[in-house]
Amino acid sequence: MNTRTLNTNTQKHKKTFFAAKVAAICGLSLVSITSMAQKGFDFGFLIGAGTTTLINKSDQAAGAELNFKQNISVPFGVTAGYTFNEHTGVEIDAMYSTLGQGYTGVGTATPDPKVFSTQLAGLAAANKIDITGNFNARVALQTVQIPVLFRYTGDRTNKIFFSSYIGPEFNMFNTAVFHINGYEAPPTNYSVQPQNMYNRMTVDGVIGAGAGFNLAPNCVLMTTFRLDYGFQDIENKNLMFSYNGGPSEKYYGTGRGVTNSGAAGVIVTLSYKLVPKAKEAPAKKK
Image (cartoon, rainbow, N blue to C red; front, top):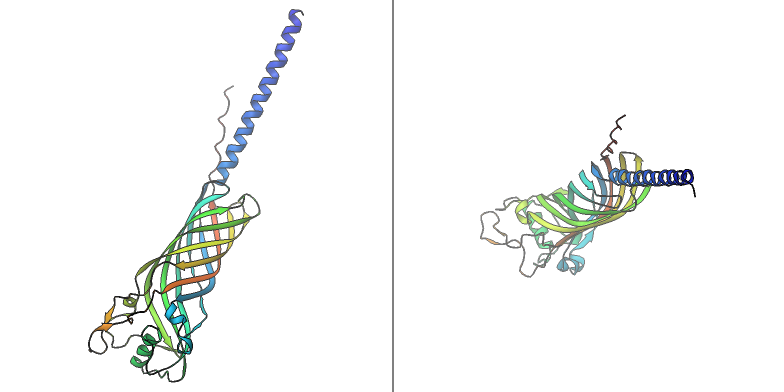
């Protein structure tokens, strides 16, 4: 083999190695840019609709004295999140919601002290609302909810992708509004205010699943079916009160069990993604 042939083969190997090196660099750059494109903050607005309930075993076992009626809530608020990659991220929301329960029942002169009909009868008497015979009532707890969520999704680069989240939620109750037979029934002449009747903060668990839609490179619409369950008693069982200057007594009867909050519904979120731009490669010196 002569020197000329050796030089030719050496040049071919150098060209092949250089081409492979360039291809590898381009491939790594593409993966890096794709990964970078998925990371970033997002923020937006949310609104929903669903049902809420207050779950208490004594109320559920009360029979005709107290029955449950559907209660509709329309939560709304703002959301912010951070996406780590095309599948995972975190999110925190701030929502205003009205938790509560609707009731129907039959008035009685001696309601069971373990059942919420006792509290409704007291509020009706204080506001001169007749609940002889059939009555209906509603409890609305005005609440600020702060869920802190871990997000897991399908590939967020797709036009449509699966979405889900799970995490704790902190409920901060502002006040309670009571209605009986269509009339507002505040605790008139009570020594306590509505907000004293409930614990000011409780912790819930939240889980949701749905679909995401990339409407534009920076705009995402999410629709999620969401379940919310309270782990703590929302009622302030230690509350003492007096009516019209009378003797002090417990507001909730002895033996009344834990009252948990629950909610189920659909949340729609419209978010704007702040996707960082990929860094441009420095220009080669001539």
